[in-house]
Length: 186
Image (tube, rainbow, N blue to C red; front, side, top):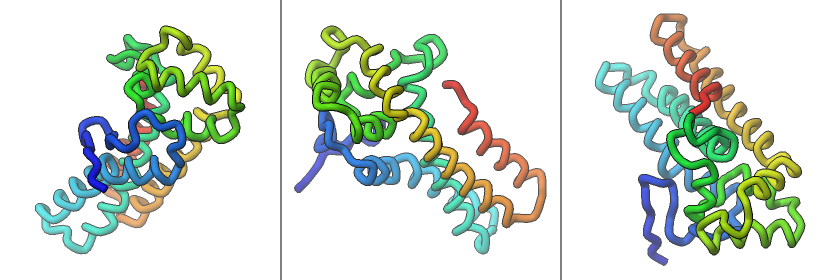
C-alpha cells in the first residue's frame, strides 16, 4: 500500500482521522520524521568535524532528543496557550492527528468518550465538542502525564549518552539543549 506522508506535519494519510492509532504506530511516525532528522543532523555534524568515532553515539543522543522534542510538542498542543504556542491549541486533533497524550487517554476511555474524540476528528473542529471536554478526557486518564513521563525517559537516555563523553563546553551545551527540550513552553 502506498501512503502519502506530509513530512512537514508528522502525518501520513493512512493515519489521519483514525482513533485507533497505537503507541507503536505513533512512535514509528515520529521516528520517521523528527527523531531521524535530529539523528541525521548530529551524525553529519560529527562527520564534518572529523568525529567519526563519536558519530554513532551522537546520532543516538539526537534520536532520543528528537523523540522527546516531538512528545513535548504534542503535549504543548493540549496544555499551552495560543499566544505562547503561536498556533491554536488543540490543533493536532482538529487536523486529524491523534498524538501520544490522546493515545494513552483513549486506551482507558469509555465508548462515549471515544465518540467525543471521533466527532472532533470527523468535524475537524471543536464546534460540537468543546476543546475543554477533550482536555477533561486527557486529564481523567493521565494522557498528558504519561506522555511527559515518556518524554523524560527519552531525555534521560540522551543525557546518559552525553555523559559518556568527556566534560567539555560542547558536552555542557548539548546537555543544556536537552534540558531546554523538556522545559520549554512553546
